Length: 154
Image 1 (cartoon, helix red, strand yellow):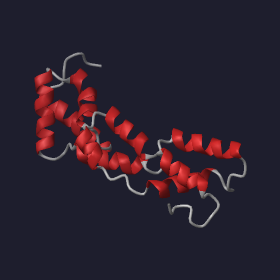
Image 2: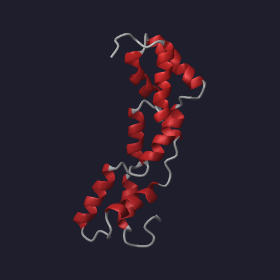
Image 3: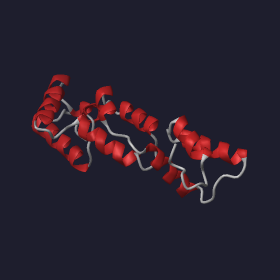
C-alpha cells in the first residue's frame, strides 16, 4: 500500500468508483476519502465539484436509503439512520415516509402468522415493532384491531 496521498485525478476516480457501487452521503464519502486526500481543502473542492455535476446528492442518497430501509423499519429508525450518515434535517424531513401503518402490518404478518391471543404476546409484538422504529400510535392501532379486517383503519 502506498503512503503518498492520491493525486486529484486518483482521488476523483476513487470517489466515482465508490459512487458507482451505491449512493453515498457527502459526509460518508468525505470520511472514506479523507485518508487518501492531499488536504482537507482538496477533498472539499472535489466534493463540491461532484455535487455541482449532480454525481453526489444527499437528497438522492436519503431517498434511496429510506426506500431500502422502509421494508424492515419504521420512520423513527430511518430518520436515525439518515442522521447518522450525515444527512441534514431538512432533507430527512422531505423524504416521504408514508404508509407506516401498512409497512408495520406487513412486517408483523411476515414474522407472526396468527393474531396475538394473550396480553403477553401482544406486548412481545409491540416491543418488536418498537425496536423496528414504528410510532407508538401506529403500533397501538395495529395491535388493538389485529385479527380484524379493518386492521389499518383508525
